[in-house]
Every structure is written in C-alpha cells, then in structure tokens.
Image (cartoon, rainbow, N blue to C red; front, side, top):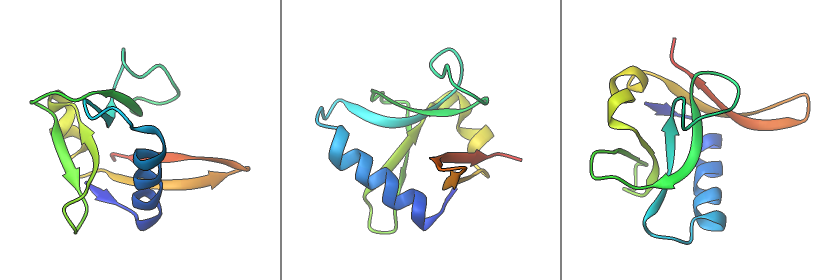
Length: 94
C-alpha cells in the first residue's frame, strides 16, 4: 500500500493522540466494522495476530489491515485530503 506523506503524518498524529491502549490499533476495515461512506474505512480496533501491519520507512507502525482484505488493498493508495473543508482519509483501490 502506498501512503502519502500527509496521510502518514495524520496517522502518526492519531496514533499519538488517541491510541492509549496497546491492544488497539488503527485498522482499514470493511462492513460490518465500517459503517461510513464507501467500501473501506479506518477504525480503532483490537489488534489481532492475523492483521497485516504497515510501517513507515523507520519501522514505525502506521496502520493495519484485516487479513481477509489485505490482498484487495495491497496496491491501494491512502491519502489525507481536505475537500470542501472536510478533512479525511481517501483510500483508492482502483
């Protein structure tokens, strides 16, 4: 997965500010865990041994992916954008 520098910064900020429980992680998921717009989303969820961990160039964990969708998002790109003053992550798998 290709992650933009802006998305890396936001992921690290969220991890620092909101992830206080070491058993939790930021994770890309699908329905039913993701209830928002689009097919994929990012949630804070319990870490599982089967999760695929994505790290930055320094070896710092950025995000994980449910194992059952890891091949689907393998070639995806993740960016952090601001559209109409609505900041958010954008996952492009196509």
